[in-house]
Image 1 (cartoon, rainbow, N blue to C red):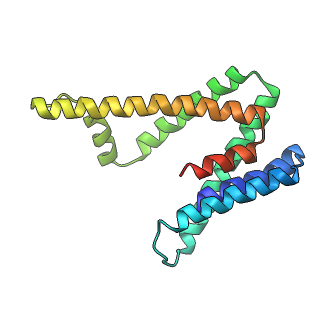
Image 2 (cartoon, helix red, strand yellow):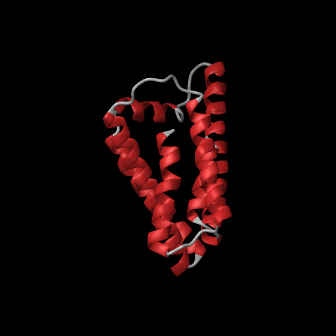
Length: 169
């Protein structure tokens, strides 16, 4: 909830500072409504417990990184071809994921490898294959959604795209 609300706000500020974007009053009201809706949606699904300051700091750091990523993508799209930026961003994402994979614990890697191991039982084998197909299908849909998000960022406002994206949660 904290990250989903902070990303559009940080992006809005970044877009104003980096790109000197001026928003119409309608766009500003729209972004405010989207951020407020995100707050309302997430507020109703959690218990009211005090949030540790470390959690807030980590959430703010994550939101800042997401916002910088979106703003950097917008800057890259304004200078280079869409496909070049898209491919390079995916290559660097793969390199980052590979590094994280080797940093995470042994148990997480074992769970990942278990998706691709053949099980002795036919029932377990079918479940494992089904889980792998669902995961692959989900990643394909996620990839298509990612391309659509980048197209929207290229064509429009990063802050508006991030505000709309925050509501999905």
